[in-house]
Image (cartoon, rainbow, N blue to C red; front, side):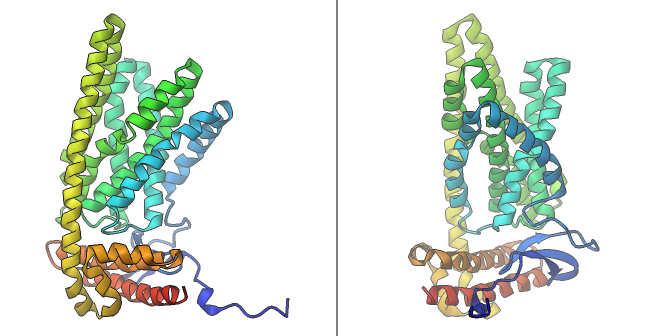
Length: 393
């Protein structure tokens, strides 16, 4: 052992942990070992014992979900595997939406886990009790839309509480991650029951391949309303209700269409098929409209970001040589693609810090200078790391 050379200091990264918030020493801010996150805890508390991608609600509900998914895996392994299909389909879209202002990985993982644990467990309990008291149709059309959308919205609110949401795009991105986590675990249970009933293939085709965006489409409205409230500096709770109402309404309409189609199909197959096809067509049209709106919104955000970079570089003394790449979106994409894989993480950190600064200055009201200083310091540190990682390629 004594013959081994000493470790290279440049390869040693600090341990990921909670540290005193540079913007407010009374809080704790998550540091992933190389960069500050937007994740903070409440003031005057003891140092948190959980990493940034976990929280007490997720941990508590996660134990039950792991046990149930494990049971499903023993009885029907294909149900668990098929439940992961929406990840492959939806994740690239969420990554595309998140490219303008990349969110920290622990934050995205926490949102995914919230949907697959907290929202799932609360919804299971509420829907089971409702079905027992009022019947399956009531649970499907009333309880499920209200409880599921409310618990998914709470996942976005939790992200706001940890200062991870800066604006509308952030709210939509976190809504997508929470909804995706919920859909994955819910699909596993549906596929398990379908396997028992002998309808596995049809259920997989319908839920995993034809409607993987259903839950993200419902929760999109809550994310939009919450992100808009944060951006405008308004309290989340009163301002989010219109979005939550739309989420519940679209979810109830979708479930109601499925229930009505199933009931009419038993009476007349042609009417039942017509109801289902009409309902699916309506939601396809809604999905296309939302997709077009998101694409336009993303282009506007790209333009605003590119226009803001020059002023941010001068204001915060960020080295212009590295920041110049962010003055053109096409050049940004090309440079990132040309970088070695190990340098892309540092490039994304520079991008994220500049994007957060841009959003911070765009929001109405006085700029939070302490938070701006955190993001500026992160940009400087990321630029230094990028020089080392790209230079050593």
